[in-house]
Length: 119
Image 1 (cartoon, rainbow, N blue to C red):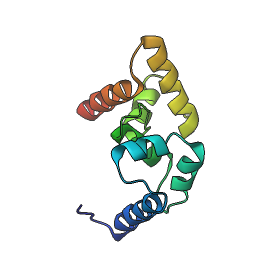
Image 2 (cartoon, helix red, strand yellow):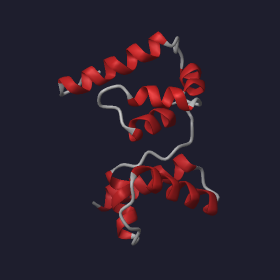
Image 3 (cartoon, rainbow, N blue to C red):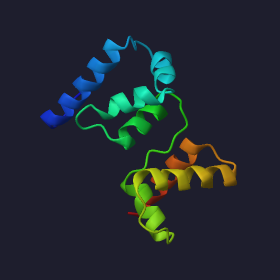
Image 4 (cartoon, rainbow, N blue to C red):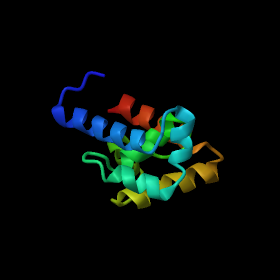
């Protein structure tokens, strides 16, 4: 991994140390580990890890989640959705995915690709 900032390297090290201490060695381990709210909260204690990082890690290991980033915020704003906090906006996207019959992560990726291309 090539990090441009020392802070990102420190965050990666913090995540690695936490996972190693909890015996998380494989993708399947991480998938199961992230299924526990206490573990997700423990990740948030690592400097530089916010809710988006936790949700993004979940997506990397096959947990279908919405990781709200600047692109998803812009799409929501363009659609007339008022400014919402991370959790409320993620819930709105999750509900939209359910109503549309789409996988959460698939909807997130489609919105991300659309706004990235439009921007």
